[in-house]
Amino acid sequence: MDALAGRLAAETDIRTLQMSQYLGFLDQPPDTPAHGLQPDGKFHLGDLRVDVSAGEPLGDVGYQNCVPAAMALLAQSWYAAAKEQYTPTLEDTLKIYEKISPFHRDAARSHDRHQSTSGRRKAQNDFGASLLLALKLWVNQERPLAGLLPEARAFLEIEPRNLDQIREAVLRFSGVLVGLALPQSIKDGKGVPRDAWYVPGYGPVYDATPGSLSSHCVAVTGFSAREFFCLSAGRVRRLSPEFLLTYVEEAYTVVPPSALDSNPPLRDQITQDLFDLRTSDRPDAMPAFNHRWRGGNIM
Image (cartoon, rainbow, N blue to C red):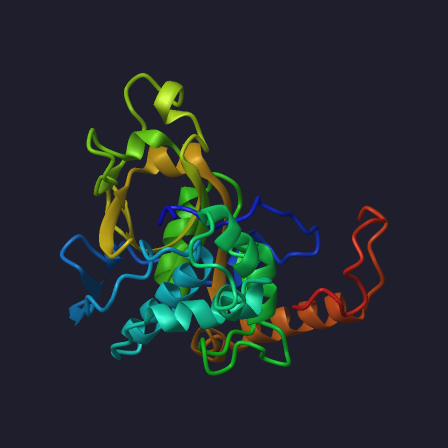
C-alpha cells in the first residue's frame, strides 16, 4: 500500500474549537524566522538543537497508517520542546490505529495469505482513519490513548488557508496536523516522492490535481521564512506555502498540557468552553443525522 495514504475524507463539526477565538489570550508572536523541525533533521528551538533519531519507517510499511503516524510525530515535537528525545515506532502507530478506527491486525492472521491485497485490507479494515475522530479520541476525558500518546486536553481548528495560524501553532503548540489531497506531481519520474512539495508552474491541473495521488496526513512541526517542514515516510519534506494553500483540506493543532498550564487565562477559557460543549444539546444548525451530541462529542 502507498505510504502516502490513509486519511479518510475531511469531516466538519461546528462545535470544534477554533484557534481564532483564542488569539486574544496569546501575546504577540516573536519575530522567529525559523522554528521547529528543519531540513537538517533537527528541531531548532531558539539556541537549542534537538536531534531526531531516524528510527524505523512509519509510512511505507504496508498499512494506511498516516493519521496515527502523524499523531505520533506531533508527540515527538512535544518531547523535543521539552528537550527530550522520543522516537515513535511502527508498533506504536499500529496500536493507535487500532484505537481510532476499525483496523485490527489479528484479522489477517486467519486469512489466506495468498488472497489479493484488497482481501487483506478488508480483513484488517485497513482503510485509513478520520483525522477529526482521532483527535476527539486523543482529548477524550477517559484517555483511551493513554500509554500510546501524551495527554492532550484540547485541539483547535486552523482557519482554512491561514498560514499565519499554522506558523503560530507550530511556535506555540509545537505543530499542526494537516490533511492533504496529494497530487501525483509530488513524485519524480521514477515514482519516488520528492523531498520538496510544491505547485508546478502550470498550476493544480493534470498530475497536480488535488487528490490525484491520495489523501494523506502529516504533522507540520517546523517552518522557515520560505517553507514548512514535516516528516513523511522517514524523510523531511519541504512544503511551499502555495502547496499548503492548494492542497490542505483540514488542519488542527493539539494543545499540550504544558502550553495551557503556562497560560492560566487560556487554560480556564478552553476548560469552560469544553464544559459547555460537553453539557449542551445539539446546536440548532447541526444536521439531525449527526448523533454525537450531549457528551458524545468525545472532546
